[in-house]
Image 1 (cartoon, rainbow, N blue to C red):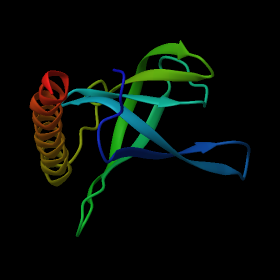
Image 2 (cartoon, rainbow, N blue to C red):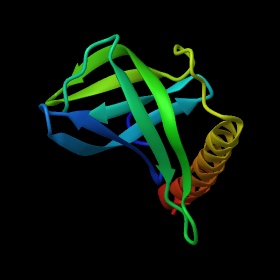
Image 3 (cartoon, rainbow, N blue to C red):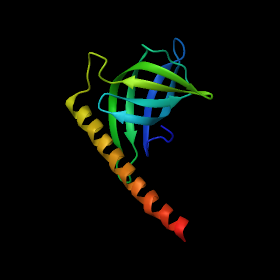
Length: 131
């Protein structure tokens, strides 16, 4: 979990008081069908819930999985930030089928981007070392 997933953000709102809310964007460091790991400087506790939108930035049209219920299951401190494990399946209300399809599509695109990135960094680094 050294680098965030390419072109993927989580967006959510946090209540700051009776009438104030803050809009937060956090980088995603891991994603699967059960949940994700995100990094932010905001403080949450295990057991807190979030209503997340996952946004995959694409050249023509972004892929957005909106309204995902997330349960924070773990918090790890890293410098002035925290890594949070967020579980999608720990709640009774699961995403609708269209949101599940969008989440699956986001995971597929992330996997393809990671494969392309590893292919680019693999042989090129070997050529530089031998030359």
